[in-house]
Image (cartoon, rainbow, N blue to C red; front, side):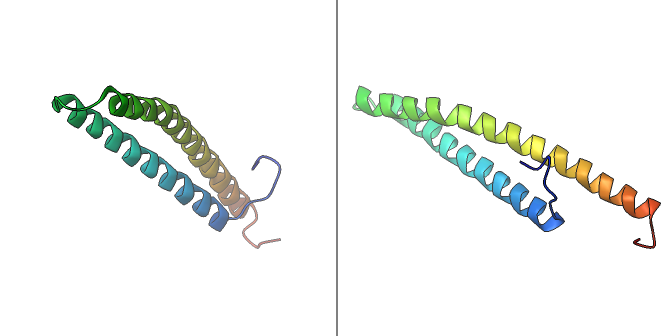
Length: 97
């Protein structure tokens, strides 16, 4: 995506904020499901269906969270590289020409 297209600092910040929001949201959902599993395991009357539903949700959320974290880390690395490149160009050509 960003490899061959120019990108602005504002666009980078927006992408990073969106990625961070996704990671936080997935983390919250995963934590909620894990808490619910603990609650269900402590309740003698809880059904296997409820437990299975939460286990399935955890099983689906965990890889999505891992992928989102990996992609966000890669985006942050790429953003640092682009910022360094911008700064180097400005240092090499301070007059803006």
